[in-house]
Image (cartoon, rainbow, N blue to C red):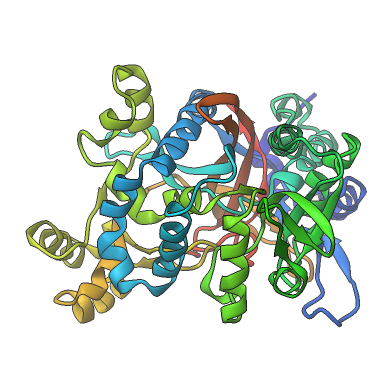
Length: 475
């Protein structure tokens, strides 16, 4: 006979037993993270942080997030192909944000050359939170869309079995049946494999472009192993390796360490600190100019910026990308939270005044990926007070702060005491698409991810040490 979840959460003796079982089960199923801090420190592997129990998510909102993903895939692809939209949208941002400006300069350079490769590969992740309105209703609201290095598809493929086992041990067997199968590692690999086959050379390899210290290596490995199952060769290299041994031949085929590169899969290159020297930027330009398929290419990278997200929420903009598709537009727009420009002028001035009057209702977002960059509460006033009359403010956008309903759960972290937390969750949905010329070859939802953190933390993901891995429990 099953018991109630609320009773299990309060049973200290049972929780202590489940904690040990959960850690061992995570290790058994490969929910792993490397704990080495430097390239030369010894390898130490532990379980990746995760919730003791899966988090309830309304089935209708979960299905909504999955259903709209193929439309977001198409939207990102169409934005990436629209030069005038990218140029106009990012014009104010690149004047004040040096990182986005460097990316845009590369984009302009490759736009001026004949395009060597007609194959486009996109592996993205659209992130949502569940917003509780004043009338008590709950809706799905998009936080952002990640078009480069969308992570945790590998580890998310391993966590369902862990939570199913924990729920059985806790005598919550009925709940265990509501934890869905999930294999984004295979879904992402399908996109990579399709692009590799279209490239047309069995000798050419998929190159994962990685950081020097990769704590999240096992997340990569699950995707990599899916490619090896298909007999697709994979190598892992850093920017420095591309700088040292990379070259283009007369056909602009890319070679690194003497190996022809069919796909550059960027798991690095999304933050300014990833570019440690001018040679790193030179390597990025060489890869963009090459015949290799880029995942993402530079235009798709730019399509994922916060400024583009804000511009897409303007009235009439989606209609430009989806003429004669009102249902598609309605599905996408239903997920948008309020997004506001900080460009110079009357509209931006109104945004500043609005944010400073009620800072707790908004989030100030720079053009950065990787988590931990957003600004909340009184800090919004401090930042905008200094920037309100400066063009520097255009490096940010303002977004409505989502008001989710907290859920009680335990967060398991190596070396940290276990305690019951008030938690907030973020649902991610992976998308994969491949296009050759004007023909869409693949467009699918590739799986999902749930990340959960204590409600005391305003911002930060798993890699930042704040959120932990989770699973949706459909209710």
